[in-house]
Image 1: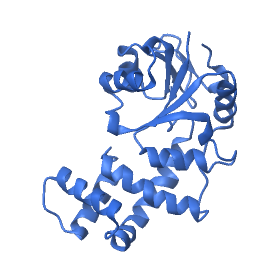
Image 2: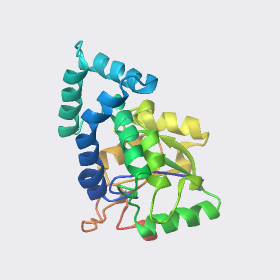
Image 3: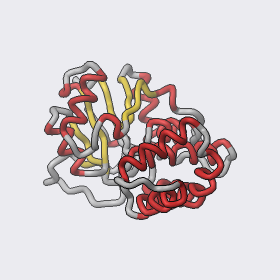
Length: 224
């Protein structure tokens, strides 16, 4: 029996185009000014120091800005970058520059599952802060009360079995009682290897009955 559902964001609850065509370009455009304005902030300074350590070089702030931009352009899942992007997006959400995109079927079914007593969690490569911002500023209102917890790359990479084992420990449920939703087969493979039930969202693709994970077009087709 499934007692908890862990969902990915991009391509699963939310459109890839929102993240790639709205959020990423917004962060890229505003990152240089944000770093220059807030580099004295304790939280931002810690992220800059973490990024320097990962870059493997003693970079000044301007060179570090260039490194951030390069990581964005190459879609690198760098934890301090993700955290910095979350802070930049927070400003955008608060200013009303955009709303967090969530598919109507996802919003409706998440609410139904919550009402039915299922615990809901998010696992995304975007920072927990960014996750909360997206779900907190949707056209359906604030959806964050639906979720019991959030996970990002601090718990591990999304294509690593150990990450899902750690999530099961945090949720405090046997892995077989947790359903993981994603549009990325490598993530689903890792979750399945950890013992999770899995469901593959293929919103813009044809269903493949022979796929290694059960495929559905939207949340309305998910059964458990």
